Amino acid sequence: MYCENCGKKLEKGEAFCGNCGTKVSNVKPKKTVNDLMKNNRNLVYLGIVVVIVVLAFVFFGGQSEEVKLVKSWQNVFLEDENVTFGEVVDYAMTNVKWKDVTYEGKKAVRLSGVDKETGTKIVAILDPDKDADTIFLYYEEDGEEEYALDMAFYVTEYAEETAEHLGRE
Image 1 (tube, rainbow, N blue to C red):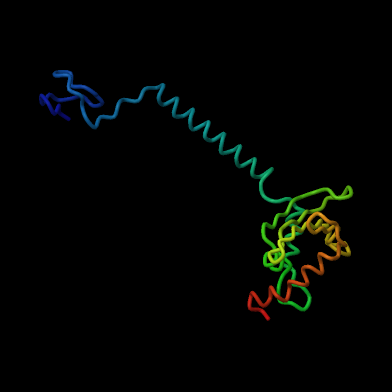
Image 2: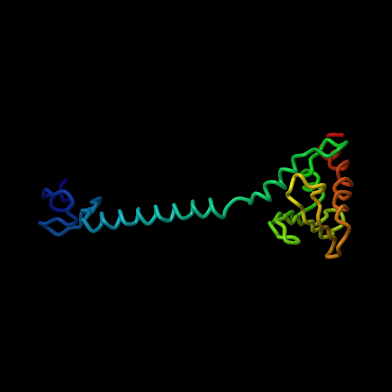
């Protein structure tokens, strides 16, 4: 490569012409040992951050076994309807949230949301034990405790409407 100003041959990596002092364009400065070490250190730090994020996801991310178990109930078809529990909840409620809780000393799952039709806030505590007689342990509407099995009636009430909405009559 040659200097654009005076035409003198330039050594590789020179930032300025040794003859006239003109700044050489398109020249990458030589990397020093410190630069290389700094780049390697940055890669190590990046690797550590990635490992921490992956471990955090493995240990804290995703859903608990209780939520996974209750959500598996969503895939069960309701009697006499061609819809699942989950489809009915999604159709009937907005802002649906699932959360692990302890209810009467036992692990359970809290299902909450708002009835789309009435605006009523609904909270239900569900027992994730598949061998239990019912998964409905507690139920409330707008903060007022109701009979726990009313949650089953609530879901049944919307089952036919959900099936119609989904075109599965």
